[in-house]
Image (tube, rainbow, N blue to C red):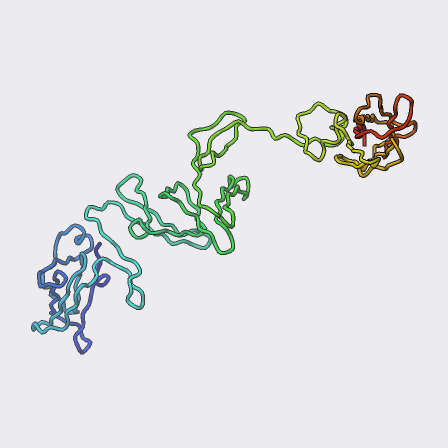
Length: 366
């Protein structure tokens, strides 16, 4: 890149502040006394044509047209060849420095450049535009940090036809996880679809998308190793409720353990009691809170959760005592209520007798 030392001319003054008429400006390669060409215009500097004489002889106003091509060493003498100053590495590439002399913007040159950058300011309500132009039909623009190895951070980016180098990272903040927003057509409003990461992530995961679309009705599913694929949707099975179980409704549902009891085919209460020395003991049961010894060969099973009425099916059996084959059991007349069942054991005489064990089971509505 080239630039003028001063626009449109550069002027030099002597120690009295008067124009340095006839002064001599020498231009060298940086750090040497090897002559380096300067030019009367930036166009000549770009083309390398019409180089100035070296030294450049200043006019009566101490002025000259001086365009530099790259960094240059300058030496200024008066007309009698007395050196006034020598400055090395004068920037001819139009770099921009801040008020402290630090570099803010550095321009690199391409010898055969045909494309360039345009920055346009804007009136109130309009956007400042950074654009490209040149001999190519559609010159592209590449923005990179540290030669491509750094990170470019953009806030509130609104872009059209932008190509980003992989991987694309969307920054988060201390108060919010990263979020990607996909807005609707601006003619329709300002709503958007958003994809947002969780606030805390236990393990870094990269999801790999499937190749192409699935068939109608399929869903995106994971293989557990970050790979995604199209799969057939599994319809979730709903839970059966008490009413459906009691009515034995034909439906595709599952029955949780705590509701199995409501099916009419399931025993609502059962118990097993052994008798030793004339004393019955409840050894195993379901929904039986206790048994009552009502005398020889007579006990009452007390049901924990009552049946809705006394109209349920109850079955009682016994285990005969050793050597006896003529014992049998029965539910006593009037002995079945919603919450109790009174049973007895008899011989063929008949006479009441304690069996070796009692077994009881009941079915019905509770």
